[in-house]
Amino acid sequence: MSLSVARSIAYSSLMATQVQMSVASANVANADTDGYTVKTANQSARVLGSAGAGVSITGITSNVDKLLLRSIIEAAAELGAAETTAEYTDRVQALFGKVDGDDDTGTSIANSIASLETALLELSGTPESESLQSVVVDALDTLAGQLRDTSASIQNLRADADDEIEAKVQEVNDALKTIDDLNDAISRASALGQSTADLEDKRNTALESISSLMDVTYFVASTGRMQIYTTNGQALLDTTVHELSYDSAAKVTASTTYSATPPSGFDAISVDGKDITGQIKSGAIGALIDLRDETLPAAQAEMDELATELADSLNAVHNQGTAMPPPNSLTGTTAVSATDAFSGSGSLRVAVTDQDGKLVSYQDIDLSACSTIGDVVDAIDAVDGLSATITSDGYVQITADDADQGVAINEMDSAVGPDGQGVSDWLGLNDLVTATGASDFRVRADILSDTSLLATATLDDSTTLTTGDAVLAIGATGTADGLYDTLTGSNTFDAAGRLSKTTSSFSSYAADIVSANASAASHAETKQSGKETAYNALSEAMSSQTGVNLDEETARVSELETLYEATATLMQVINDMFNSLIDMVEAA
Image: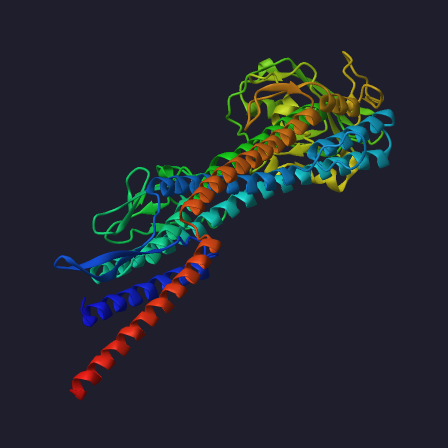
């Protein structure tokens, strides 16, 4: 072998060793870099004719298992959804507080209902006590405020989820642009024969980031470019980026809902003008959509069922009674018009009394004789000392003509509508609370400002009444007892949210709401733990296969340094031999 060939072989070995040392050192330096995979400098023998001519580095590669990578991408989507769901259900659970039946540490609506029960029980023993009436109204107002606050907090969570959808859509767009840029860089590097391994690592990391936000499919084309699609095949990245578009709602209420067909309270997540909201089933965005449109509305539905049933039950009892002394005027809460058809049965007793509850006048109105709302109003207006009318905004109003006298009603056996409501209850003439749901549950404003307007008496239901007699009775069978009984007795609740149709007391139903949401939070936490375990197992498998082993790489660097020194020594010997040969030729 000539000295020239020997030097060429030694030089190629020196250069190859230098590249391998560089790759091994980079592996050590990036051992803790997220998404980095161990790189290998591939070496092959150079042959000229039939003789060896040294070695060369054919490329720097990493060995990533494509099936394992795909499993990690899918697991990242499931983990992203589980983490988001667990976070929000935990926040929902906190809204409902905790139930504690043994002491006063309970913070749930069930505890507030129990406090109202206690206040009513005490009032039923002394219904004439103004201080106890005030305690009842305060307890009811506290409960009303808690219902409103909880409802508002649920809608705030929906708004948070909606805002987060917008933010995460932008994160997806940013990651898509990153992958598009990396696609270009990989194409350029491939054309120049340069390694693309580090660029592919960064691209895989960006892909995993997208997957944690939404479920996607992907493949790498023969050109080396990664293409990304929704699970339904909508292109997000092919030769260009197809950005997602979404603007969060300016205001979110219980009536704000998403619909795939207009009108919709929430925008659609769209790509190239196409709604893809329904295509996103997993990842953080998929979980946020489900929370905003399903989970949180279910919690709201449970609260609304509690609030409306509570309002209906309390009002039904309160309309059977009257304050003592009775108010000068009563105004309904049900919007009507004089021409509305009316179909009722039984009789309604309407009376005028003085401040001591002594009868001034009264009339039992035969409802079967009334065919319109106007007929009912006219019949009441005909009672001596009363004026009845329909206000400009459509509510029946009954007023005693003398400012020092009051209006009292006994529903007797009156029945209106499919549920057989008493007329006063049906018109809402003496409602205790107003509510269309939990969001607007309130104690009647005049009762809140004057607790003596709380009904604690009932108008005498004797066959006939005598002018001048006391006809308002306060006692053990009064309204306070009725309110307590309806709170603690069995009530029917329709299916709402996670709860099936059931019969229970109000405090028990409220406790069921707390329990259902606590159970949902616990389930979400368990699911998150399982998804995290699965994701970590796959990540560890990937790390075991493609991660940097510091011991191995450090030993490799040391081995290559020794090889480099030996090759450098050989090069020096060959150079010395060349110099000696040259000196001999020159001397000859």
